[in-house]
Length: 424
Image (cartoon, rainbow, N blue to C red; front, top):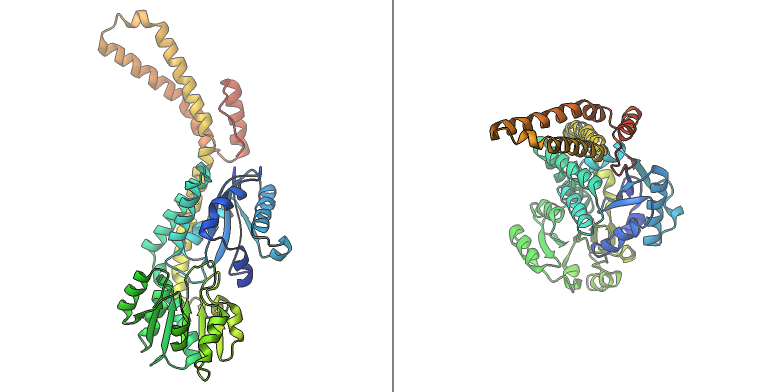
C-alpha cells in the first residue's frame, strides 16, 4: 500500500470553496465510510480545519486513489469537480509524508506555529481510528506525524509565532478603527485564537464582550480579560454595542445573520461596525457586508497581514530540519514493515523444523540431565537464528527496491512460504 493525500488549503483555494467542502464533526463517520468505499482506498483520515480540508489515505496506486478521493470530495459535498480546477493537490508517498509532518509541526498553516493544529491532527486520527478507518499504515503515519509535531514545539521556537495571528487581526482592526481606546469588542468563541486576539485588543483599552456556545468558557475568558460574558443565542444587543466583532467559533452554521446585523445597526445608524470573521465556515453571513456602515473581513483579508518575519523564518528552517530527519525514519520503517509477514513466516518455518528435529531426538535427549537438555535447546535456537540472520538482513537493507522484491520472491519459493504476500 501507498500513502496519498488529496486536499485543498488556504494557499490555493478561496474561502468560499473551502467552506463548501468543510466537514462538520458530526459528518465524519459517514464521510470516512464514503471515502473508503472505492476499491482503491483501504484506509482514510480526514483533516478538516479552517486552513485546509485533506483526506489522507492508504491506496493501491496513485492514479486510482487520486481519482477516487477527488470524486469522494465532489460527491459528498455536491461540489462539481470542475470547481476544484487545479486547486486540489495530490501528494504521494514521501511527499505526502513530508506534507503531513509539516502540517503537524505548524509550518503549513496560515498562522505559522498555530497552537491548535497538532491537536486537530491528533483528533482527526483518533476519530478515524474509532471508526475503524485506519490500519497499520495510517496509524503509524499519524503517530510519527504527532511525534514530529511535538519535536517542533519542544526543540524550536515555532509555537511562539502564533502571536502573529492576533497581531495581524489587531493591526487590521486598528487601521479601520484608528484606536481601541474606549471601543467595544464582541468576541464570538473562546478558543485559543480568539483568546490571543481579544487579549491583544483589550490590552489597548477596549471593552470586551464574550459570547460562546459554552457559557462557562465565555465567563472564564471574560473574567480573565476584565470583560463581560453575553448570551450567544440573542446577539443583537451585543452587536448594537460593538465597534468590532471578532468571530471564531467553528460552528457549521453562521452565528450571526444579516438580519440580526441589520436590526442592530438600525438602532445605531451613525456608528460603523467592523467584523473580523476568522472562522471556516464563516460565523457571520457574508451578506452582512451589504448593511450600511458594516465592514466584514474574513480570513482572505488576513493573508497579506501574515507574511512571516525574519525571526519566524529561522524557526521555520529549524522545523524543516526536524521534518527532514523524521521523513526518512518513517520511510525506512515502512519499507521494513512491508516484509514483516515474510520474515515472520521464515521464523515460524525455522521454529517448526527445529521443534520437529528435537521431537525426533526425544529418546536421546531424555538420557541427558536437565542442564544438558537446556543447552541443546539454546543451541538449536541459536543455529536457527544465525541461519535466518543474513536473509532477513538482506530483506531489510533492500526494502523498497526491486532487488528486495526479487529476494523476497526467491525466499518464498525456496522456503515454500505463503505469507499472505501483499503488494506494497
